Length: 336
Image 1 (spheres, rainbow, N blue to C red):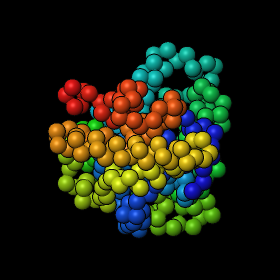
Image 2 (image 1 turned 180 degrees about the horizontal axis):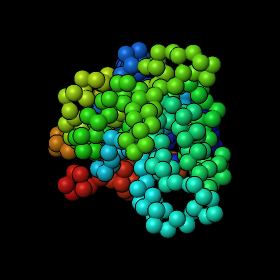
Image 3 (image 1 turned 45 degrees about the vertical axis):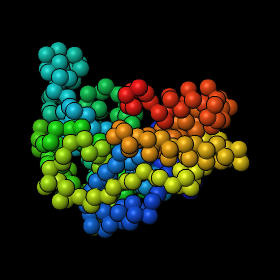
């Protein structure tokens, strides 16, 4: 695993750079099956179990482009394909302030269409050309000056392959999963406003490899809402089970420590082991009370807090008990 201590995401709690992830064997197999079958990988699991970190890790390891889309209650299926700025078009139609002294310019719909993550994944050259054309027409930025927000990282990666993360799809309206069936099955779609057909692109040398070997679409769900059966049928489904054994948790802690500070000292491993043992105890109590168990992410929160503040895991230590209550045993979820 490649680690870059001091990198741009070294000190963020939820890393999305793909540098750190401990891949379970079952999940690695599910990823391979999804690629071979040409199906999206629907990743189930509890919040904080590491679902969102898996996709950027795969992209990092394979050196594939990566696109991330976080679903909200307002998301529509087409937002993953393209967006249309009708408000800006109406403003331009009313003011024509952008028109200047250039006769013959028209407010064509294409100028207000912006490629979404699936467009960038399926047809990156088409997406880049569309953006250049649109912005050149409106002269709102230098023609070659605009790039996809994640394009800087992607420029150094394999242009023929991509990983797309559609995060927390259960937050969306039930129509959204069904609305993605066509685009994900065919690797293509038609932009309604302009009639532009977006399809999987051949490689730069013109060789048309089977498209489902080219992209991996990872969709995560916290299972807060039941997903349509038609959608589930078309996915490879894997469940990410939180690590329960002390050794597993310590391994995860070691990987994060090495990525964040460059090494894991003996004292760090002792702390990680003590916290993992405590986490098991807290999880047992949570199951008995029927409340949410603390996640792996909260275990790591406790690790960083204790390491940074120099606090040990001691039952009679008031500071440790305070940190424990802030990270692992949150009073509101235990009804305290």
